[in-house]
Amino acid sequence: MKKLFLIATTALTLSSPLLAADDFKAGDMMVRARVLGVMPDEDGRVSNGDTLSVGNSVVPELDFTYFFTPNISAELIAAVTPHQDKTSSGIDTGDVWLLPPTLTLQYHFTQIDGFKPYVGAGVNYTHFFNEDAGVLNKVKYEDSFGAALQAGVDIPIKDNWYFNVDVKKVFIETTAKFSPSGVRADADLDPWLVGMGVGYKF
Image (cartoon, rainbow, N blue to C red; front, side, top):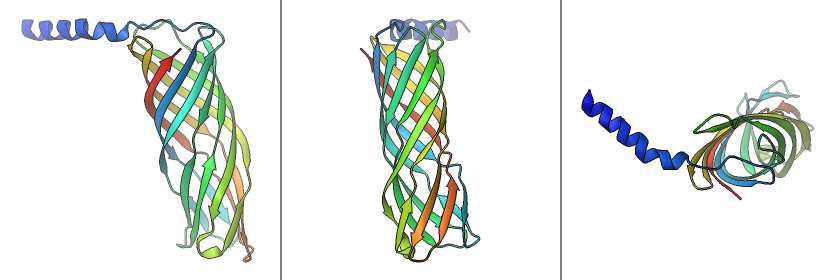
């Protein structure tokens, strides 16, 4: 037991400098680089009676956070995500790229030692591009506005560096129109965005 206590004490002593980061303050800017998992929670309906399935994606992501006060900030994320689509009957409806800039207003709980959790809410605009209709010739996706919810945590590493974990729920609704077949698909994509990475505070 004594040996275990000594090991634990040593570990805490060695790790304490990693938690010695300054608190946030008005005017601070944080830039993060994350690996982002995009997992659609879709409800898609096709005019031929099928349902639509949208594949997951893993992409790099950048975000920029500006602090108005030690607790209040705004975050903008930048990423593009590719997705493959198919119907429940096995029809390949091709793939599409999404550009989903998302702006959230955040509240940071700065009174907790060792880590800085936050929650946020905001808006998302999703632009669909580079559409490939698969076997259905041509397709056009409508762009979308929607809400976004967020929760995450920044864990001080050293100086102004932080380890970050972030989860967002983004509400995206679109309509895909295929030509010349006239097939139409209405989809609520509503993806979960799960990110993990590092940030630097200026």
